[in-house]
Length: 373
Image (cartoon, rainbow, N blue to C red; front, side, top):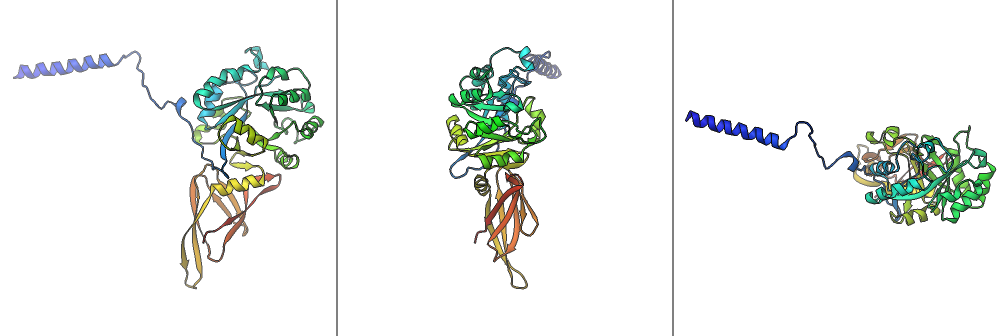
């Protein structure tokens, strides 16, 4: 009996050791995971507005084919992981240090990135940055072009006209960069007056230009927010900490390149950066109203027989709002949250300034919230 027990114990141990040796290689063990970081995408929830969808875009990105640190396919993966719907790679057309190490024309970064974008369902817009000195017009992004080569080595206005001829959409980049304040040079004025500048960056990387937002109102330009990223996006904006990178929210009829282009020319854009929105008051009002829902919970009669209504405000989206009320008090409606408040039953509305929604320099959005019966 004892010998039988020892036999079975030896058999069990030997087969266990054999199975372990069979399944594992002690020199190299691979632990596969279907949810590798490269396949995880952040979801950014934004409202639809008047039948238009919120398309999350970054129209100013650089790679190693100009003065960036990152390969084009990596830029696509970053943008997809960060929850964007569309990007434009806009490498400089001028000579820059990286070209000493990486050869190829100004269309190469788009050509390399396109298969990766298509495999992830990310919209990739062909673009370039027409780079000149400030007095010669500064830096101008041309989107939806077909050949950046044709914008090389010609004066600014000729390069812009060539891009427009290709169907291009022109953004005036960082108008306050490298100078003390936003300043409109004669070239920029002429391009705006001729209809060959369609938009201006009101936010770039970490700089916010309130004066440029006033230009949007005064000259019918679309407000744009971009990263102008040259480095690793996650390290610069700390995306792993659930921050949302700067972007342009394009209100389009659908998430397609054609619809984005159509919406841009209609100036249906909102600049989103650092928890703030900037844009046309009409569009911001509609966006704000689409974000919130207000529900009356109950009515309470106090000892003095005065009626008070209890309300619930819901914001299921990833943009929060900071309201300065008429009485001077502040109400914060955080992203992905609900708040309750109490008002006299006879009060039918709330009037406030939404101080993180900007319509031009020195002005924030004024709203009226209608309260349900």
